[in-house]
Every structure is written in structure tokens, then in C-alpha cells.
Image: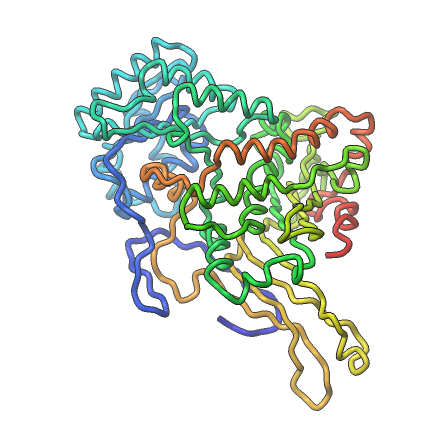
Length: 523
């Protein structure tokens, strides 16, 4: 830990390595909470981009570092007509793009990969898949345990859950100790009604303990550290309330545009893409009361309580609480980029928002009157995710007559990306004969004095699925409360007469529309 003027420096990413963690208290290992039981990972939609970019690299990194169960296999399935060999070649090409690919380990890893083509809404196809998985289970001894990862468009979640269930793949395997689990990627519906409808379909074939609604943001180390920081340090929790905190700002900014996701993004927009999931989770972790136990359902209970306290937006003056924007052209970092409406696959007259700033109030004893400012957008000035706690100003300006200036309020920043850090800003006297203050920052770099293993978000997610730990996954009641808050906002934004005039343009490479700064005028 260092005490110095200015902000924290950049912290590089850590690879998962089979090393031992060193701390001030001695030696400890934080890689695994337990050893997963033998199982197979069945990736539905395995020919898609998500499998090549995220899932298989996560599995491979776990493999080379001894983090997978034994035995373990991966079965890819999709409409694409691939053989097992061609699937392996495709995954090898993807892994070669990563920095940790080891050609000497490839053949052994490749032996874990299998492929079976399917038709998503064809029951006979899934019946054949069930027989294929049973043969592999018998051959490799995976104990009948299966994780079904739905790496498919949201429109296919329900028919796939139905066909899996009707094929008997959602039930226990050949022994009573075996299990089946299903992993669903966001978005979980488009609004409250569709989220409830999706849940009904899932629950016809899977019990709640079998359903893992993934939000990879929650698997980031620094996101998990929010709870540790708050509830393991007695100096912070007593002041974590309306008496001492003036405002909370949560930002998740991206420098990229819509890229290759125009088809999805045109239907979703920033509110469905970021606020219904990532932003709401960061809000809950920041605002929740301490759970009675550090256990999945206890933690999720407290999150749900936070969502239940969110004050509904008044639709007659919605724009006092919400700013929407859409990026125009610009030259971030000297590179010319097109406006959103000029992106490939985007409607030329699109009214899809790519930026949103929201002022939220929680009607609770802890947070009454404290504004939470949530901001997320594409093509912004910097890729940045952080939570800023701004404390109230000192009640009496003791030094104003001496210094002739106000004193800057204390500020705590929980950095998630790119700098995984915790910084605390406070006032101290400058050296010298004159009485004058300066702001200094106490800076903790997350990996400081730690040389041990760190799991990538998808690696952590996969491990938790195999272990059956739902701590970092959404529960349905939490989803429904978030949709209950957001659905009226979405309906007003998408149906109001002044919709086009309320969608404010902003230059790519900026921090969004000027109106967003006015919304946060007291920050």
C-alpha cells in the first residue's frame, strides 16, 4: 500500500498459474473451494463465437493448470455440420490466438473434445444426442453428471430447454448421486413478462438448483472483493449509509461500438444489455445489508431486498432521472469511426440507445435520500468500470478562514477495470511553513503482494457450475424485481411521442451527452 498524490497506476492481468499465494499472514492457496466431481460439459451452440472466444479458452486454461475434474470431457453440439476432428481443429485455431496456448499439451487436451450435430427444435435430434452422451459417459466414466451450457441466441433458450427435458437429459443419470445443470447466458427475457415466461419453461424441466443464470461480471475478482472489503473491515461498514455517504456512482464504459453484435443490440439497447444485469448486480453488492452467512441463498436474499427498495421512476418526468444517447461519428485515439446508424446491420433510422445515465434512489433505512448514479455506454472515452463512493463534506469548514477554500470531500473508488484497485482520497497538510491542504490518495493494487493464481471470470463461472455453487448466479426472484423496475422505463422510452428528441447524440470518444453530466451535477 502506498500513500501518494494522484491516482492509481495500471495493473496488468494475471494468468492462472499453478502457484501458491503469499500474503502478509503466511502462505495460502485460493484457487479452488473444492474438487468438482467427474462430469461432461455439453456446449449447445458450440460452433459460435462465444465458444471459441471464451468457453474453450477457459476450459483449456483450467486444464493446463490442473483445475478440471478427472475424468472430464467437452461435447460440442450445434447445427453446423462438423466432425469431432474438425471441431478440434476449429478450437485449436481459436486457442492459438491466446497467449497461453502450449502446443505440447494440445493433443492431450484435444482428446477431451467431442462433437455431435443437432437441430435445435427437433426432438429426435435431442433423443439421438442423449444416446450419444450416454455412450460417452459409459466410455469415459463421467458419472452421469452433465453441465449444459446454452451458447445460443436467446430465442432458442426455451425450445432447447424443452427438447433437453423431453430427451430425459434434465433428470438424474444412471445413479442417484448424478446431476444435470443448465447454464443460461443473458439476456433473461426482454421485459418482465418474457422473463417470467422463460422461467416457466426452464422450471418445467429443471429445478431451481439446476439453473445457473450467468453474469460473468460477478465472477471478476474485484467484484467479489466488494463484499470482503465491506464486511471484513470494521472501519468501513459503520459509515456505509446515508449519514456519511453523499452519493454513489457506478460506471461501466466501453470504447468499442456495436461491432459484430448489431442484430442483437438493435433489439436490446443499452438498458437491456447492461442495466438489467451488470449494473443491477454492482448496485446490489454496493448497497446490500450484510447477510447472516456467506452462503449463496443468504447473499442473494440481501440482493433481492435491495431490488425491492428501488424507487419506481415517475413516468411523467422520466427524463429528470434518465438520459439516453446514441453515439455519432468521431476520432477516438485519432481513428475515424462511424456513427451507430452507419454500423453494419443497424437500421439507418435506429432509435436504439447506446448510452444511458440513470439516477436511482433506494427507499431503505440505510440509503434514504442518497442518489445512485448508474452510467454505461459504448464508444466512450475510456474502457472503465468502477464504483465511486463520495462521502459527505465535513460539517464545519474549520479551515475556510485560513485557507479561503472549501475542502474536497473524501472519496473511495473500487476499481474493477482496467485497474483492479481500491483508492481512498483524503486531505492532509502540505509540507512547509504555510498552512495549506492537498488531496492525497491511499492506493491498494488488487494483486499487490500476491503472486498466486487468479481465475478468469469464465473459468470461475465454469468451476462454480461444476461445484454446484450458485453464489455468483442470478436467482429468479431477483431477476423479476429488476425487470419490475426497468420494464415501465423501457415501455415509456420505446413508446413515448418524443422518443427521438430524447435520444441525445454524442461524439464517439467522448463521455456521452452533456445532459448526463447535468444529471450528476452534485457529484
